[in-house]
Image (tube, rainbow, N blue to C red; front, side):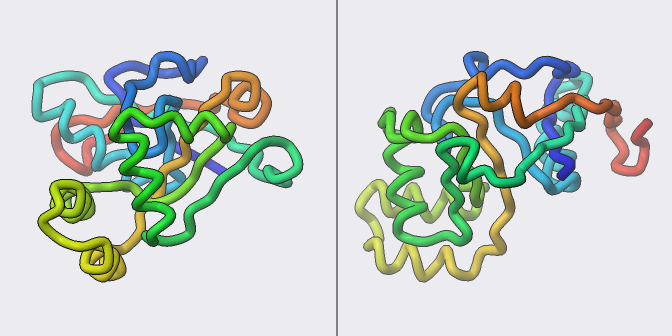
Length: 167
């Protein structure tokens, strides 16, 4: 499967240790299998006047359950919500896995998560709102040895300010 990573640099040799703390699935190297999502992600770099690149990888996702500790969230549900909230609060549950896959807490999702986290809405209300969100996808590689085994750099391309101006 092809996966994509948006950044201000070309990432030929990803490192899980470079990732930021307290993200949805913890610290790691994040990719997506949705090209459009990667391109949307880097718009923030373009808005700041920075260069933006999409690095493209082949991801050998066959038999992940046999190769590593793999966790997949197929939908926004209570398990996903608890997992994301824990990681964003500095929890370390993500360290129980080598690869974690599932939906992103994008702006609309994050607003719901923040309302719940601030005790302004109930978990039931938060989950009801999340059911209407179209799940996007992120794949977080948590351990370097598994990343090295299953993820291989193929190519890159630069994205410019206008949506159709990719080279």
